[in-house]
Image 1 (cartoon, rainbow, N blue to C red):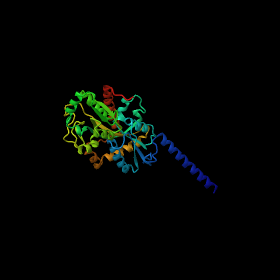
Image 2 (spheres, helix red, strand yellow; image 1 turned 30 degrees about the vertical axis):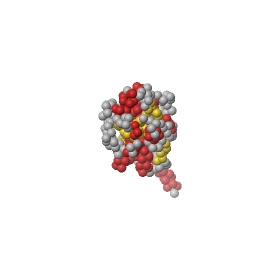
Image 3 (spheres, helix red, strand yellow; image 1 turned 90 degrees about the vertical axis):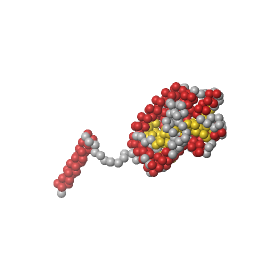
Image 4 (cartoon, one colour; image 1 turned 135 degrees about the vertical axis):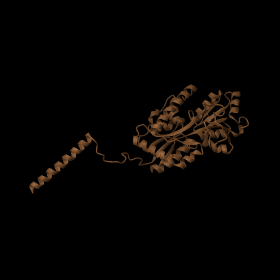
Length: 340
């Protein structure tokens, strides 16, 4: 009986030594795979998609549609949080300083991502504090005037002619200093050689309200947000900022067609996470966004508004942002635009 117990102990010791040896060999050589599934349990609670602009504008429209579709793909609630102000810097700063766990995400635009670093005297965040996840979409702006002014300037050439006769008297509104609508206006003034006054607003909607009220002479607005007012006859479109005409506005010429061959500007939008977010979470979010972008109903929803859906990998989006940094940095320096 004693011999049997000793034999059993010996066998257990041998098994233990063999097990420990296997672990050691695995650590030194090929590690033992203990799980084929994801190492990060994400998302396990609601995600907040932070937006740097107020409700009603193109950013808000795309962000809310994306959030709605992501809820299906991620099987988790996605909440849109509008934090308007400072050309999106308030929202960007909030996300940049948030915990990098994938639950606070930024729906960003050109201002927050590429432009602010060249405009602001003091940046509350660094651009590389925000990790590129996916480019979502891009679209053209359209120059619109109040319908009551159509008899004064019913074409781009007539608007330029009036502006040259009244230097400094005409004004235009934008979504905010450094926004694509502002830069469109600044580049237009430079290339047309006119003196006009820029009036920044906290988003597209309040600028449009003032244009409709007759407090602005013109503004550059996203086609999809301007379209209802165009169809209602309240504003008149003079030109669009892409190289090709808009499907939504086939009778409206481009700036290129109107005699300004170098005037091509698009607004673009993408998703970012705080620096330090695990790469696996970044890739999971990118995969979910690309699944949304592959849905025909999602593409069609924006196509009729002249918004193009633009799938990318995180790396491709990062390269695109870098190229935009170079373009806008050079333009802003040339125009001498600054925000103190």
